[in-house]
Image (tube, rainbow, N blue to C red; front, top):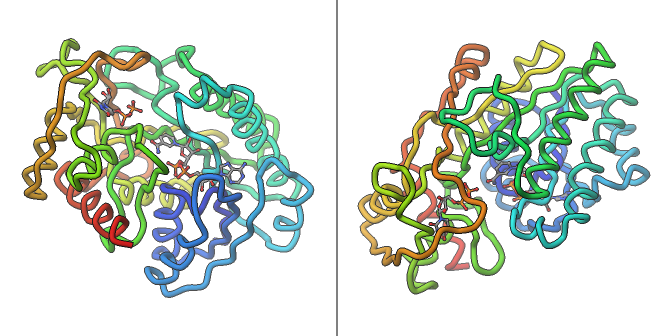
Length: 332
Ligand code: NAD
Ligand code: UDP
């Protein structure tokens, strides 16, 4: 298939590009580079030994994006392009609604206009809010506490309606849990600017002694060791889920959790990281972070049943590859 990957130079998008090419698909990337760099294209070339068509375009700009659809006959679109920082979305809600919701409207509108039949969308476990774990696709979505989560729930809603109204347009909504780790080459991974917000990149910076210690946000949750539980999933497993989702998409609208189904606490992750990488990660327990929930993990059975997909990599693989990328990235 010929597939348009929006946000393809970003963290999850770049790993998915690699897996799409491994699976013999043709890929075109559109990204406005607001949270990634052109260097990723060189890394992708090194990993895949392929030239990949790239357009630096904002997906909210229909006029600029339309020629890409006109000139390539895409079989499918994977729409990753979006802003993803929860805290920032609270401070700049309009940026988030504008960028994330409008890009979904523009990209799906062009997909319809140019008869692209398959559309895969990056959603998030955040749409479940704080409900009983494990989260299952059939649960109602809970109003989220931040604009970022709302943009995901709204985009899901829009795409459902579009799929219902257009019988040849098939949509897969993928709800990611906590993507971590990096490609085993160490060439691509998550490279946040400034001080990371997320746990794994923060742990990597502490291990590298770029940051002094990790602040663990609360050890008084109702979990076995008191620290927050999440379903960390290796980004390469996640990327493979996209390949299967687009290849096997057949219903009008499908929704899948992409997670391992296993909850890991903050302390468990820190200890796994120290053990597998033989490094020290000093930490301090601090106050809970506002908006955090105690536990989030998937019931991933539907993806296995329908797509034959399940996460293969362990928390040790995730920590090992995150560290490898951190070393590579920092040395550059
Ligand atoms: P990322 O920031 O690394 O990648 C997103 C890419 O989209 C970036 O390269 C950015 O430059 C690009 N982009 C943003 N707005 C754009 C626009 N208007 N036009 C063109 N390009 C644009 O983030 P990621 O972690 O790879 O996330 C990919 C998608 O998955 C996002 O939609 C994100 O919300 C979603 N998601 C991420 C996580 C996570 O924890 N990483 C979890 C759930 C869902
Ligand atoms: N966390 C932490 N210290 C940090 C960053 C995160 O203790 O510096 C905890 C956070 O409270 C949550 C887990 O690690 O329990 C995962 O947080 P992250 O921001 O990576 O993902 P989230 O699930 O919040 O999207």
